[in-house]
Amino acid sequence: MALSPLAIDQLDAEAWERAKREIEQADSATGDAVLACAYPDGGRGAYEAAKATYIVNDHAANFERARVILQPKQLEFAAAARSCDLPNGPNEIGFGGARGPGKSFVVFAQAALDDCQRFPGLKVLYLRKIGKKAKEQLEDLIRAVLRHTGAEYVNSEVRFPNKSKIVIGHFNTEKEALNYAGLEYDLIIIEETTQLSEKAYKALRLSLRTSKPGWRPRLYNTTNPLGPGHLWYKKRFVDNERKRSRGESYEDKRRFIFATVEDNRVLIALNPEYLAQLEDLTGAPLRAYRYGDWDISAGAYFTTWDYDTHVIDPIDEIPDNWDVWLSMDYGFNHWNVVQLHAQDGDGVIYTVDEIMHRKTPVETIAADIHALLARYGLAADDLPGVL
Image (cartoon, rainbow, N blue to C red):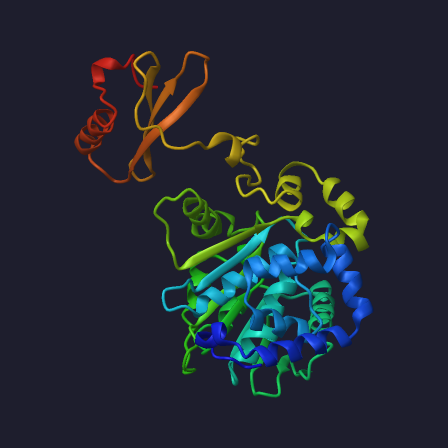
């Protein structure tokens, strides 16, 4: 079924029933095995409920016709990807966290089994790090997703009968990745995105253009914490998604799906030793690859920092019986940072607010400090000093 994204709510019931019969008659043993692993608490019923939560019928049928069963977190990503069809929907979808949640599988499956099927002639760039291990993983991935389709893998291209294609691109250095910039793609997928700088990422995004009616250019990406691009990626995707979940102002053209190995029950069921391998790591790699902790980076001073523990809702008013003070890390060429702190009666210290300046006169900084204090009904005389 190659439906326009604008017609997904008008799916022909007969076509949907026909697709379901094809699914039920094809390789049911394999499907049942995957369902048992992915949905151990309810099997097919739990799977149908998860689909109803995230995606529409024609979307599910495109995966199932290829005998692909998505797990809940993968369904969440697929739903976010489909939301790119909407006129005001996002156009960048990130999927990241720990190793092992099935990131590569679902982004490739979404492009190959859904996007490329709905829009004939779609041109997709699938970009990932090169290497012997990466090549073997890619071949396994292509075989797993496409084994029940009419697609061909020829000369680093996946070609579909409707003239859509996925160009498989490789890079070892950022310079090699930028060789793909400047060309035109309807969809770009970048794996291991934190291996790139923000500048390179933005340069690749400029290659997103289309002449397909009804299609909105978009970029899917996957990655883990750490890597050269950790900080910019966290700010662009992870922090933005946190703002969205807290109801704060955020960039609505970006979505981020967080996942860990626990979200890939099939992997854990078939390879229980993989979890032990992750837990055998130590330090920053353990927090990054086992738990998908974006608040850690190698060499960070505060190695115990945890977002869920240490970040709370904003404090709008400081109680009169709390101690308050300012701290400042002076800078001119580098950032000058002033923070307002408070301590409650139980000894818990809160960093309430901060202001940052760069290449700014002292007089301006001083005025902004007074304005900061005024927001909380404070004056300089109320403070014991500045640290």
